[in-house]
Length: 226
Image (cartoon, helix red, strand yellow):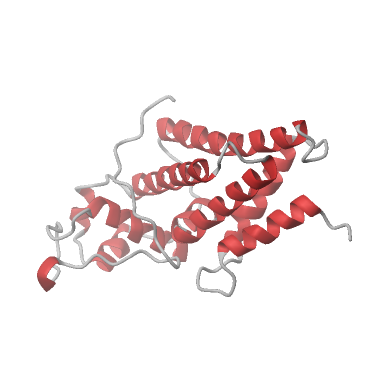
């Protein structure tokens, strides 16, 4: 990769599509300015910014709004990030890193390709649901990455995630589990089904993301033939 991404504290998995609140120890009241009471201010800024970008879009959001939502001064945010764009880039790197690592952990290479495909699809959907605002920011609130080194990192993470899926499809074709298909084209179709769930899926809705992924998997594997 052209440049190593700056160290960013990993965001803990989020549930039901919204960032967890960070309480002040001992019930102490929040103070405007640089926040001494948060265990990980950098991670909290990313969580809150993802929520803002997901709701309003990157262009329509401002650091003033982010600071007000967090009871920070705007200057406090500059202690951790130099610009709104840098925050956006960090969210993209976090999202792509977490997506690939979640899928890689979920896929058991000893299992047959059909099972590995399900593991991959459910892991992708689960990460989307647990990090919904970050996913919306990446896919819908897209602004383009400004840092060329981080953009290279993002492309490498995207390719690694897609490469994992393609290998599963290729193995399935090789052992006869799947008919002769293009792993590249089929992989793009699978990723489109999963990632663009974000257009309509709501973490607080009826079906879970994993249930949707299971239905997608069954549709792909069994086809539409009765």
